[in-house]
Image (cartoon, rainbow, N blue to C red; front, side, top):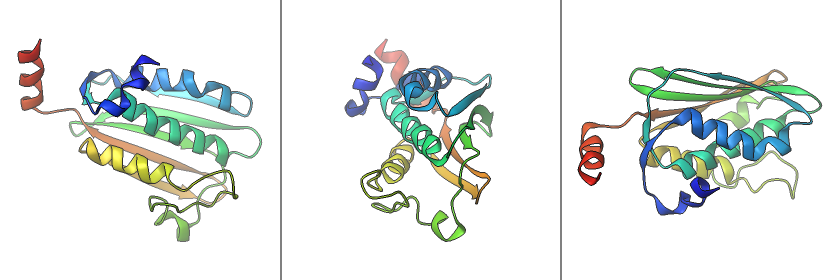
Length: 169
Protein backbone atom coordinates (compact mmCIF):
# COMPACT_ATOMS: atom_id res chain seq x y z
CA UNK A 1 0.00 0.00 0.00
CA UNK A 2 2.91 2.32 0.69
CA UNK A 3 4.11 1.88 -2.91
CA UNK A 4 0.61 2.65 -4.26
CA UNK A 5 0.30 5.76 -2.10
CA UNK A 6 3.35 7.31 -3.78
CA UNK A 7 1.72 7.26 -7.23
CA UNK A 8 0.84 10.95 -7.04
CA UNK A 9 4.39 12.02 -6.24
CA UNK A 10 5.66 11.45 -9.77
CA UNK A 11 8.94 10.20 -8.31
CA UNK A 12 10.64 7.46 -10.26
CA UNK A 13 13.06 4.94 -8.87
CA UNK A 14 14.68 1.68 -9.92
CA UNK A 15 11.90 -0.88 -9.57
CA UNK A 16 11.65 -4.63 -9.98
CA UNK A 17 8.77 -4.76 -12.47
CA UNK A 18 7.98 -8.37 -11.55
CA UNK A 19 7.51 -7.24 -7.94
CA UNK A 20 5.21 -4.49 -9.20
CA UNK A 21 3.14 -7.10 -11.09
CA UNK A 22 3.01 -9.44 -8.07
CA UNK A 23 1.99 -6.67 -5.68
CA UNK A 24 -0.74 -5.47 -8.04
CA UNK A 25 -2.06 -9.03 -8.40
CA UNK A 26 -2.38 -9.30 -4.62
CA UNK A 27 -4.42 -6.08 -4.55
CA UNK A 28 -6.86 -7.13 -7.32
CA UNK A 29 -7.02 -10.81 -6.38
CA UNK A 30 -10.43 -10.57 -4.68
CA UNK A 31 -11.97 -9.08 -7.84
CA UNK A 32 -10.63 -11.84 -10.06
CA UNK A 33 -10.22 -15.07 -8.10
CA UNK A 34 -13.78 -16.35 -8.43
CA UNK A 35 -13.99 -16.27 -12.21
CA UNK A 36 -10.41 -16.08 -13.51
CA UNK A 37 -7.35 -18.25 -13.37
CA UNK A 38 -4.24 -16.09 -13.28
CA UNK A 39 -1.17 -17.41 -15.06
CA UNK A 40 2.17 -15.68 -14.48
CA UNK A 41 4.97 -15.81 -17.03
CA UNK A 42 7.35 -13.46 -15.29
CA UNK A 43 10.65 -13.37 -17.14
CA UNK A 44 14.15 -12.57 -16.01
CA UNK A 45 14.17 -8.80 -16.51
CA UNK A 46 16.25 -5.92 -15.15
CA UNK A 47 14.91 -3.17 -12.94
CA UNK A 48 13.31 -0.19 -14.69
CA UNK A 49 13.27 3.54 -13.90
CA UNK A 50 9.53 3.94 -13.14
CA UNK A 51 7.00 5.18 -10.64
CA UNK A 52 5.86 1.98 -8.91
CA UNK A 53 2.43 3.38 -7.95
CA UNK A 54 1.60 4.70 -11.40
CA UNK A 55 2.57 1.50 -13.21
CA UNK A 56 0.58 -0.45 -10.60
CA UNK A 57 -2.39 1.80 -11.39
CA UNK A 58 -2.07 0.89 -15.09
CA UNK A 59 -1.78 -2.82 -14.27
CA UNK A 60 -4.78 -2.63 -11.93
CA UNK A 61 -6.88 -1.10 -14.69
CA UNK A 62 -5.78 -3.69 -17.27
CA UNK A 63 -6.39 -6.60 -14.89
CA UNK A 64 -9.84 -5.39 -13.80
CA UNK A 65 -10.80 -4.77 -17.44
CA UNK A 66 -9.61 -8.25 -18.37
CA UNK A 67 -11.68 -9.74 -15.56
CA UNK A 68 -14.75 -7.80 -16.67
CA UNK A 69 -14.28 -9.07 -20.25
CA UNK A 70 -14.60 -12.67 -19.04
CA UNK A 71 -18.22 -13.81 -18.78
CA UNK A 72 -18.04 -16.94 -16.68
CA UNK A 73 -14.67 -18.55 -16.01
CA UNK A 74 -11.56 -17.68 -17.97
CA UNK A 75 -7.88 -17.05 -17.86
CA UNK A 76 -5.69 -13.99 -17.59
CA UNK A 77 -2.03 -14.41 -18.48
CA UNK A 78 0.55 -11.85 -17.40
CA UNK A 79 3.91 -11.96 -19.12
CA UNK A 80 7.03 -9.89 -18.56
CA UNK A 81 10.02 -10.02 -20.88
CA UNK A 82 12.99 -8.05 -22.12
CA UNK A 83 12.71 -6.98 -25.75
CA UNK A 84 15.05 -4.55 -27.56
CA UNK A 85 16.24 -2.88 -24.32
CA UNK A 86 12.62 -2.43 -23.20
CA UNK A 87 10.53 -4.25 -20.66
CA UNK A 88 7.26 -5.55 -22.06
CA UNK A 89 4.38 -6.41 -19.74
CA UNK A 90 1.45 -8.17 -21.43
CA UNK A 91 -1.98 -8.76 -19.91
CA UNK A 92 -3.91 -11.24 -22.01
CA UNK A 93 -7.42 -12.59 -21.45
CA UNK A 94 -9.68 -15.07 -23.19
CA UNK A 95 -12.76 -12.90 -22.77
CA UNK A 96 -15.22 -11.27 -25.13
CA UNK A 97 -12.66 -9.35 -27.17
CA UNK A 98 -13.04 -5.91 -28.73
CA UNK A 99 -14.57 -5.27 -32.14
CA UNK A 100 -12.25 -3.83 -34.81
CA UNK A 101 -14.46 -0.70 -34.94
CA UNK A 102 -13.91 -0.07 -31.23
CA UNK A 103 -10.26 -1.11 -31.02
CA UNK A 104 -9.00 2.17 -32.48
CA UNK A 105 -11.08 4.20 -29.96
CA UNK A 106 -10.34 2.42 -26.69
CA UNK A 107 -7.68 4.91 -25.56
CA UNK A 108 -9.94 7.92 -26.24
CA UNK A 109 -11.17 9.71 -23.09
CA UNK A 110 -14.74 8.75 -22.11
CA UNK A 111 -15.01 5.95 -24.68
CA UNK A 112 -16.50 2.81 -23.15
CA UNK A 113 -18.42 -0.23 -24.26
CA UNK A 114 -19.48 -1.02 -20.71
CA UNK A 115 -22.99 -0.54 -19.39
CA UNK A 116 -23.91 2.73 -17.69
CA UNK A 117 -22.62 2.78 -14.13
CA UNK A 118 -19.87 0.21 -14.74
CA UNK A 119 -17.18 2.28 -16.40
CA UNK A 120 -16.34 5.92 -17.04
CA UNK A 121 -14.25 5.42 -20.16
CA UNK A 122 -11.25 7.02 -18.49
CA UNK A 123 -9.21 4.02 -17.31
CA UNK A 124 -7.49 3.20 -20.57
CA UNK A 125 -7.01 6.84 -21.48
CA UNK A 126 -5.33 7.57 -18.14
CA UNK A 127 -3.29 4.37 -18.40
CA UNK A 128 -2.12 5.34 -21.88
CA UNK A 129 -0.99 8.74 -20.56
CA UNK A 130 0.88 7.20 -17.63
CA UNK A 131 2.77 4.81 -19.88
CA UNK A 132 3.66 7.68 -22.24
CA UNK A 133 4.92 9.73 -19.23
CA UNK A 134 7.34 6.85 -18.67
CA UNK A 135 8.59 7.07 -22.28
CA UNK A 136 6.74 3.89 -23.17
CA UNK A 137 3.78 2.72 -25.18
CA UNK A 138 0.49 0.93 -24.48
CA UNK A 139 -0.99 -1.14 -27.30
CA UNK A 140 -3.85 -3.58 -27.71
CA UNK A 141 -4.75 -6.45 -29.98
CA UNK A 142 -8.04 -8.28 -29.86
CA UNK A 143 -10.23 -10.86 -31.56
CA UNK A 144 -13.96 -10.96 -30.90
CA UNK A 145 -15.02 -13.92 -28.73
CA UNK A 146 -11.38 -14.98 -28.26
CA UNK A 147 -9.87 -12.27 -26.07
CA UNK A 148 -7.55 -9.31 -25.91
CA UNK A 149 -3.93 -8.59 -25.17
CA UNK A 150 -2.70 -5.26 -23.80
CA UNK A 151 1.04 -4.68 -23.89
CA UNK A 152 2.97 -2.07 -21.94
CA UNK A 153 6.42 -1.32 -23.33
CA UNK A 154 8.71 0.56 -20.94
CA UNK A 155 12.28 1.69 -21.46
CA UNK A 156 14.61 0.33 -18.81
CA UNK A 157 16.12 3.78 -18.17
CA UNK A 158 19.08 5.75 -19.39
CA UNK A 159 22.56 6.58 -18.15
CA UNK A 160 21.54 10.06 -16.95
CA UNK A 161 18.96 8.53 -14.62
CA UNK A 162 21.51 6.00 -13.34
CA UNK A 163 24.02 8.77 -12.59
CA UNK A 164 21.36 10.83 -10.75
CA UNK A 165 20.39 7.80 -8.67
CA UNK A 166 24.02 6.99 -7.79
CA UNK A 167 24.79 10.65 -6.91
CA UNK A 168 21.70 10.87 -4.70
CA UNK A 169 22.64 7.73 -2.73
